[in-house]
Length: 442
Image (cartoon, rainbow, N blue to C red; front, side, top):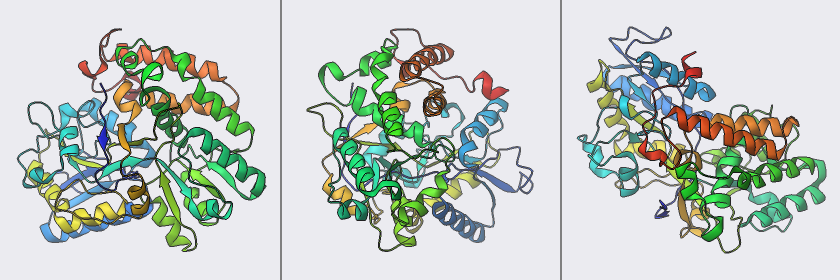
């Protein structure tokens, strides 16, 4: 069954703030009895700066100290370790897994004053059938592809809406600009952009189209033939061989991307949030646009990929639940919610908050485009994100063929489904995920 939503207000992708902690505290913080420990998955520097400024304002206003932890790419692994030891942060980011992964660790927030102000989209995503509200959403996600509008205009290229158009645009840029421009920039380190390519492009390949190209049911039931996935590694390999993707994608650092686009050295990137605003702040002569994920099959439309982005949840076994709720209420105050939403270039999920976005023109152009759920969150068992990224890395390193990528995906898909207790033919949403896998425990 499709879970599609119409874009009713400007939305786009963001990056994450990270941090660690728990009722047991953190060695870098103050005494856990007096200090609220907070972990967030935000990684973008400007977003982290805004987040930390608001934390400082809360500390001054409330007298409550907050130990902020922003581990970046290590966020997920650190939280898994804390789940295994049942020593969670007092406040933490569920980063898309509020119910399926963190549900047993979160306090119900449905009684908080701000809860009634949540828009229907986010309220339904973060609440269960019993009315439990798992987290406060800082923003709403809407992912697509950011592009250098200034560069495309110079070469007379329209923003692509299909995969063929995207490929043609990249090939034109490679031909006309040569080594001066990288058509598609990917940086696995610190950004997971290779995994992002696969995760976002899997939607138009496997789930958004109607008819014979729709595999939603097979993915849910575990009967999916992974040879139908091979198109994606084949295309990435082709792009890499043709010089359309940077040679160092596996080792490149995502922190480079803003500078490179500001210098007109890259054209497309699987990024969003404050990315465009950061580029233009660095170089006002460069304008960044956003397009939905291009369609692949004839007759299908582009798709926004959206859902839960950054959140704040309260550990249900924390000794500082009331202080944690007070912090979230502070972040949900209209001015603070607006500040954080605008810092991430994403809309606030609160109905009372009217925030502005860098990508407003892009949103307006594609306001009727439907929002699809994140592929890995909707169809894959926990742990598959790492597999998506690692197989992509091995593909670009030349140690895996596209067919081998699909074979490894199939093997890990079956193994991880069994780990969470899902049998073939059973919908993955019906199974409860264990707190942590064996690798995370080690």
